[in-house]
Length: 251
Image (cartoon, rainbow, N blue to C red):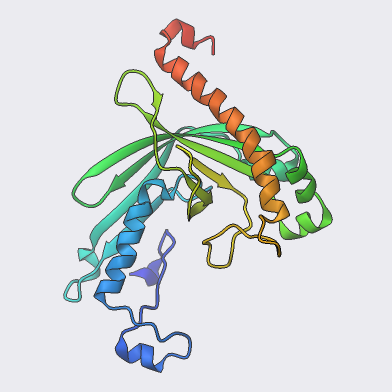
């Protein structure tokens, strides 16, 4: 079936059993049912925010195929979908390359299904480009060589269960487009064009154990600016939800 074409991105993971692991020259790690289930559970746990800051991916699905089933009997274990009610025409990464605008606002709905039940969450994502030190580093010869972009984003979950829109408190996590295993201690999620360790567990540090110059610049310049913009955007969305139709035209 796949030989005829597959209009998606397919990830194939070489999970090894006892036999293949013993013969492998790359890895002797054995993945039995328990270990594969742990990986699936980890993906499910991060699913509600998985797509929040990704630029182009709009859907991720996880399927299971039993040993005695055929390809038409796939069981959906997880499906995450991101749709936009308001989205900027071009990303700020593109705008930075073109020398365009320095901030934008997007509103997303994320749908999550485990095959039995479906739930939705709504987010307002504010994106900003740094205009100080992070921009200077990114535009330096070394920054251009490394493809740096002084981008920071803040995602605030919205409570739409009532007629009015309010921010919904969530466990704040740090992202480098995909979630990192780092809590930021805030009630919202932060994304940045960070330098991360090879295992994506930490923000890269210098030889003295302090944040690298680039990571420090992203936080104190781009993320700081983004925080102020995010509060202004949140206030506007909250006011709009409470405004009459005639007043909404004024915004």
